[in-house]
Amino acid sequence: MTGLRLYDTARRAVVPFEPAAPPGGTVTMYTCGITPYDAAHLGHAATYLAYDVLRRRLHDLGYKTRLVRNVTDVDDDILRKARELGVYYLDLAAEEMARFSADMDALGLLPASSEPRATSAIEDILRLVGRALEKGYAYRAGGAVYFDVSSWPKFGSLSHYSAAQMLELARERGGNPDDPDKAAPLDFVLWQRSAPDEPSWASPFGPGRPGWHVECSALALRELGATIDLHGGGADLIFPHHECEAAQSEAATGEKFVRHWVHAGLVHFQGSKMAKSTGNLVFVRDLLKTWAPATLRLALLAHHYREDWAWEGSLLEAAAARLGCWRDAAARAGRSPEVGSLLAEVRAALDDDLDTPRALRAVDKAAEEGAGEAVKQAAGLLGVAL
Image 1 (cartoon, helix red, strand yellow):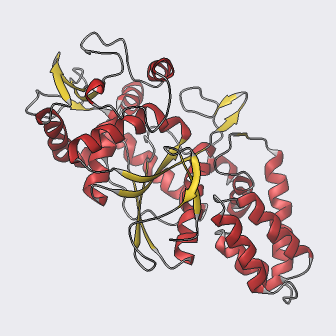
Image 2: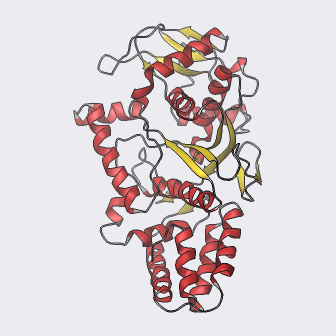
């Protein structure tokens, strides 16, 4: 028992976080990474920052963490963008991953333990697809392999969406429910035929490329084993991506895939979710030309990780003022409250489903009271260097 409580999407409740390892052991974490066809935006930063704060708290509790964050370097989006730009898709991925890494480093995120690429896991993917077929959970049609949702009674137990909701979201998020080769609209592709100008790999199921969902399953199983302590990502990945990922992983291994599903809320801008598909993006690299990384980090931490919220430029001004107060306090000799008291407050806030707004308010109060050393140490728990 860590004393840490997190909202679990599948259980729809804030529950104790119970990793397999005891204190001193390693907590395994998988977060869905970017599809590298454009620069990192604030939605990415807010999501990955949440898991960074979680890792820091786990380290503070005496755990080690192994965080795997995949790179989706082959899927419909990156292939379409590479086609538009007239570049090789892996060159596009390499360029954008370099930018992403620089942005996350600037924001002070702890480095991922591993960032495996989907294209590195083709053999793992083929084995997983083969197991799904052998066990009767998948079928071949039209040169592709599909997961048979009707064969998996637990399908929907992560998202808890109705069939109508799932169909709507599948249509909106690339699930292609109208594919005529499918036996049922919610069945999803494990292996698909490649278009003439797309990369293709030989397989027992015919030449082609992997489906989106199966890439993450193969990488998670390869890097972390059959059961992961925590799987994360934005709330928009709950369905279809994570629902499908859970189904195919458990069908293939016969074991529970994830102990805790933890999802981050979405950042909105100009009236809708910030997303590459809509183009309403605010890029991290652009903001860092004007604002200190710690300022941007504080602006994001001012929102609870599970809430949806709207980005406004004024948030940076407020965060800059907060950072200035903290730094002024840290530069002075420490006074009451004592270091231990403030750290206890911040830890209690983080243990309560990563309540960073509450943690920030506690540090604000200590800064007003001139508790310099306490402010410095508490800011460090949040990854803010003063």
